Length: 217
Ligand SMILES: Cc1cc2nc3c(=O)[nH]c(=O)nc-3n(C[C@H](O)[C@H](O)[C@H](O)COP(=O)(O)O)c2cc1C
Image: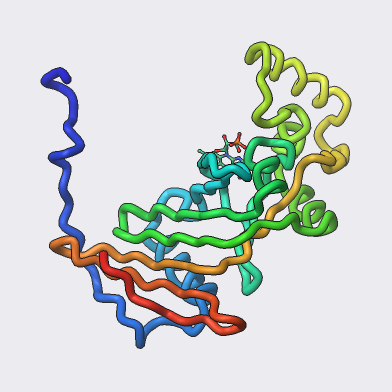
């Protein structure tokens, strides 16, 4: 290590925030998420809908990446991707998934575990049509997660598509592209506090009902 390097072991922040107590929580995790998501947005966090999605192969080899959560409601969290990508293939074989929203500036994180399933083609088409023209072409140009010869090859594919579908022309939805909805089985709300005495409140699905348990920090 050189003198200029930052040593992460010495980086320490004291978190100051309100105690989260069980009585003040919503009855179900999606309503609680809606509240925290609004507060994250109100705090002007950069992309509060960015979340880390972790998947695993059937024999338990994990992988993680960031995606943008585009919809949430009582059924769960939706993101859009290429079904033939690494995550898409892993989820097709093993639907168990973890999501993590890392809201560091407000000393919060939300961790979801559950299962992922493809949303309907009509839902995917509705969202695809709401995307900018360039992003629609990008979805066609990229065989996500596959090896490509060069950046130039990607640009060449994009230029071809641009010629075929100029601005204003409707771009069809790529067959391998679409949404995945994560139905939660457990959702943990983490709020940082002083002296590492953080709040960790986890909703766990108990049959049809959500139960809340407190975890040691
Ligand atoms: C802020 C951010 C947002 C991203 N959003 C998405 C997204 O919504 N969908 C997506 O497929 N990839 C998204 N990516 C790219 C993924 O992190 C990843 O590189 C890609 O999906 C391929 O992952 P895989 O090979 O593990 O399947 C995003 C990356 C970043 C940094």
